[in-house]
Image (cartoon, rainbow, N blue to C red; front, top):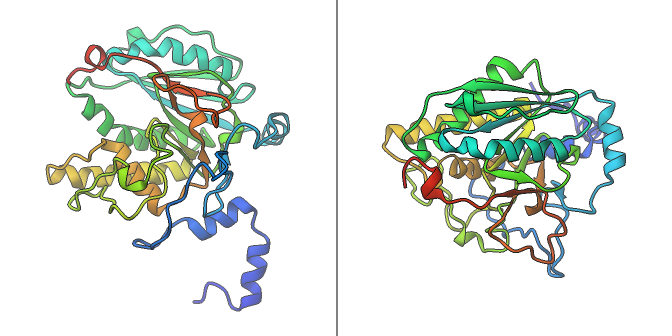
Length: 318
């Protein structure tokens, strides 16, 4: 059976699609080994680029009207689930994360935090806004920080299966060792959302820390790649994030069966997934900065940033 009976029918379908729907229709899956020039997040004039080559918006300060976009999403009565992994000494970051989130994160919208931790007694009592909720999920401890990272996709997948399909519209998974410094709102919502890594957005893709071993499921050849996406932020519609988490978990298990651990654990598999399943919206480095970096002129505001820390003190292994 043909998908479309004739060309005119095809054109009518395209005409009825929103720009987001059109992006989804055209770019859900990109053919592998398709050669094209590396896109840049900063243009020749030094200003942030507002569209990716596949027409996904790149969100920067000044690209949206917060009052207008809030009013549009208010009518949709949405819920945003948010997962946070705070195992071992990473519970030390929970207070600042949650308190800063309550000042900046989806203010005026329904939010449900899910905190994964092996020390539920260390979860701080933080005053939450109206329609903001928090659930603590106890998980086993780990002797390796890499194992905590490797298990993130499996836990996200199971949470979506067991709780989120009927309870949330969107889901974000965010790193706990971070803090909000500015608005993070509905401008970040889309089918599938990736964030540009602050340390690599100006570099050539050959220098990206992709997994380069062909035997790994996360392998990306040196001549391929769009951006380097930070694993500290994963988001989108619940069903799309579920597919991402499920695929990455399956690929992680294939690697594990061959005693392979990708260069940057789940972040390596995330970058492989986004290369061939393009995000429908990109968040500029405003939405994932690092307190160790000074702010360059093209970054007008830092909204979310990884905080200074001594890894030797907080990680269970080097």
